Amino acid sequence: MNLWLPSRTSAGTPQRSRGEQAACTRNRILGAAAELFLEHGCARTTVNDIAARADVARDTVHAVFGSKARVLTALIDIRLVPDGTVTNVTQRLGVQAIKDEVDQRKQIELFAKFVTGLSSF
Image 1 (cartoon, rainbow, N blue to C red):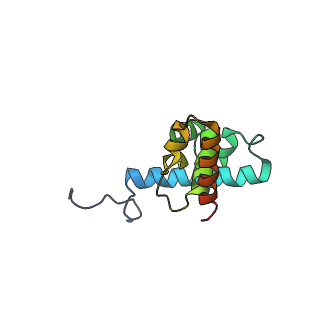
Image 2 (cartoon, rainbow, N blue to C red):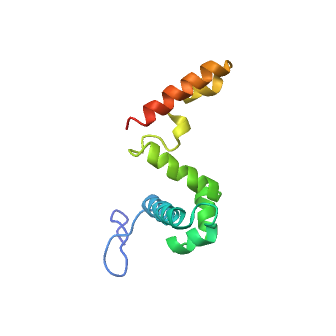
Image 3 (cartoon, rainbow, N blue to C red):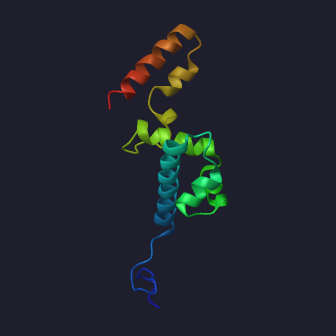
């Protein structure tokens, strides 16, 4: 066995790395959730529904995201930052300043500017 060559499946195609498999699973879960949320709404969609549509175990959804709420926020993050430069919109530049602002009026101003900047994508 040559350790320098990628493993191959019985069909002779290279196997995906664990990272690639994990990304594929995550994308399947997100795609399934997006479809179900549009079809039935978030409240009526269960983690079991998402898992069944994504063809994964319920525990896989929990292992990847932790909760249905986190699946929803991941979808929101993707919509707000489609290029994937950040995995969570709260990691964007300027968000910490909004969180740290003690003057509520100033905090609202900063938030409004931040949201306006997001909608310009």
